Length: 494
Ligand SMILES: [Zn+2]
Image (cartoon, rainbow, N blue to C red):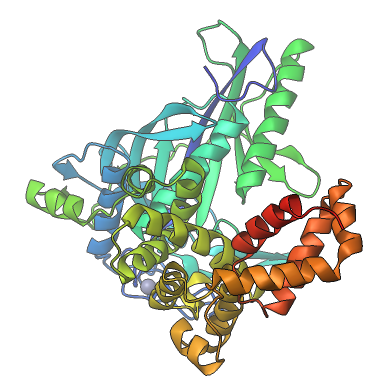
């Protein structure tokens, strides 16, 4: 069964994805050049190794191997005891050595899976392998000539190949989103598709429903957002189905997604596919992966989004919706947990719910309004917890808390300091005093009162506003409301 069958019921779509992720190591895969080249001038992060000079020797970046194994473990893969690098030979101007060091028949891992979810349905997508290779240089095409920037050459690149288990463009997008979430959680990839540090190619074919044999596949490239993955595959599936329906052949080829036009176009035919002449890389030793090291890396794995989501629902009693949003980005979940932990309370679930509301509604809103990332958040978890404490103790009303929060966000001060400095009065807890004010408001607004009794419900809102004005926001809105309603119903009309 496919998640989403919007396109067709007569044909089945078969998709496999190849994800490439640049690893967040400090240095390149086989040399000591710094990988932090994003804003550097062209050809400034280079050395004889990554420029492919003759006679140099590559040295394996241990951290890149560790990141690949950690990712593979997070994707439930098996790690072999022995692995090796191979040369993939092909001539292209962006490949400095004329070959790429990659992994062919004994990759760092095999046979994993990843679960995707959509509207209560879950599906398991097989992972064929996760392996390690090096990125190429970058070509900048100008009119009549091309330039080459070697900064990217030799950056560690992890390739994650899925089984052809994906059955719809929506599933492909969900898979990519889940993959990105995991990579960013692990801290092995920036996950930035728009910058090309996370890239995705897709193999797609269609076949009449019920047919066992796979149809002729095409490979789609240049999809640089989740949205373009889904759009490109929808377009391509439709294109292939139309060819089959009109009795035309599908050519096995590589096609590029043209975002601006919303179409895929043929790039090169696979009939002339390269023979890569793979052979073991003679300049590198084989990799012996000790079980002790694998266990050490497994121990370093963080709690992944799915587990965290389940824990938020179980331990904190959060709704699936809140747990989902809080775990989408690791930093947001971390912040939420620090708010909950910042002040001990007898009712942890109630505090967690209040913290989730504060973070998801107010903090996220303030960050957005000020174009701040979570790392730039001026509101410490302790300040957020302090605000919740003040509300819990009844020291401030919900209305006052908004004002205090804005001020704490702007100044970075603790909410209790702001309450003191601004001389914010405690809410009117004196029932008698509050009732007196309410009676006064009723007496002074007889026209509105009769409107209310005639069924105009917004008349109540006006009266509440008047009471809040009289009490200068020190009354709790919910008690004003209930006292007001009681009084309006018991006072006989004048
Ligand atoms: Zn280098």
